Structure formats: structure tokens, C-alpha cells
Length: 207
Image (cartoon, rainbow, N blue to C red; front, side, top):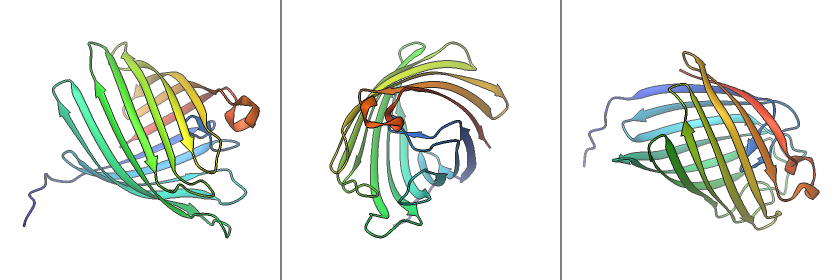
């Protein structure tokens, strides 16, 4: 059986943030750099990533993913599967994990509501099964400026549950360069600095 794929469309994305965040909580004590090469074949996407993470148990994270994104009128559905790996992990922690992501968006004028779920049967480090649900909406002011906000709920074995909130502004500066200013907070500030409220600035370039 043969598959007739569209021509490959390679790209790479570089981003730097004043602090790294994932699923509503901080990942680094300082700046985070993320590199994401990707090749798309129409709706099919194959990519990798690498990023620094602050942890006494490992030095960072990298992974590979395959995903599919398709539009049906004003509705867009997407799904992906990724294998995540820890860099230089200590003994006794899970160094690899499968992560599945499903998302849906629907355009209503300049508004775009979005829902997503991220699931791992056995997450990285000492965390077991995890699920992160998130709902949010974005608003497009013009071709270069948008605002977005979201609320997430995370449930996991081997780690604290929490609810997260974020809101921010994104602006295309010139060419492939985009800037963002985003506010993060959780309902578990008592768990420490990584769960505290914070404003994060970031720059992203995609080629």
C-alpha cells in the first residue's frame, strides 16, 4: 500500500522566555530556551524539541512527536503523540514517557474558543498517570495582535493536583518574530515558587 503525501515543508522555531512554563506551572528558575524543528506534509506534522528544565533529578528534556491537524469549516481538530525523554536523569526516575494531546478550536468572528486534553499513562520523573484539561479563548484584535486566556485542571498520581490560570497578549513584531507577555497563577501558591503568580515575557522566531 502506497501513501501519496504532499511535498515536505520544513520549519524550525526558536523561543526564549524569562521563565519556562508547562501546563500552568514553572519549569525553570530562570530563562528557558526551546528549539522545535518540524516537517509538515499537509496536515501531517513530524517534529522534535529540546529545552532546559531546572531540576535536581535531570538537566533538561527532549522529545519527538507526530501529529495531525485538520480544519472542517471554522472548526479545527488536532491530535499528537510524543515520546518525551529526560536529559541525564538520576537513577530511580522515569526517563521516558508517552504523551497524547487532543485539541479543538472553533472560530466565532474574531473569537476562537479552544479545549484540549493532555494525557500520559506514566509521566516523567516520579509522576505516574497524569491528565491536564484546559479550556480557553483567544481574540484577534488585528493581523498582528491577539489576546488569550485559559483555565487548566491537572490531576496526577505521584504529584499534587492543581488548577491553573493564564492570560496574555501576543504581538507579531517583524517577519517571523513574535513577542508575548503572559500572566500565570494557580490555586496552590502554598506549594512553592513554581506555583506562584508571575508575569513572563517571551520572544519566538519561526523560519
